[in-house]
Length: 154
Image (cartoon, rainbow, N blue to C red; front, side):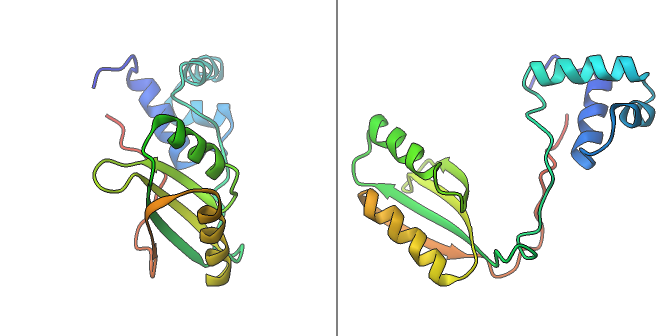
């Protein structure tokens, strides 16, 4: 894949993925760039859409969100308008952290965090009450062995 990134840009992105809390001066120091040069590059990376934002990663367990569910579903009516309406509806549900359109038999994949099975059941009931599905299935994470937000860089 061809990009407009050079080695310094990739080093900035790599450092940010490891620790987004670093100051621009600290990032520049780690990759051997002046603070001003680092700031200009980061600004360009943000404006060109490589950096979407900087956030804190929270612990679902410490927040009492012990149930992670992967929900696969297929809308009965598979039209662009119905899919757009469904996505807009689901984006209002705070428990859902991912919405993906899928190839194959399943139309959509959702990832949701809830406190317990009763809250998950309420989430599914809410989904079903507002939409028509020909298929819906929840699978629960028993144990997560690896999860990262770090993307592979060239």
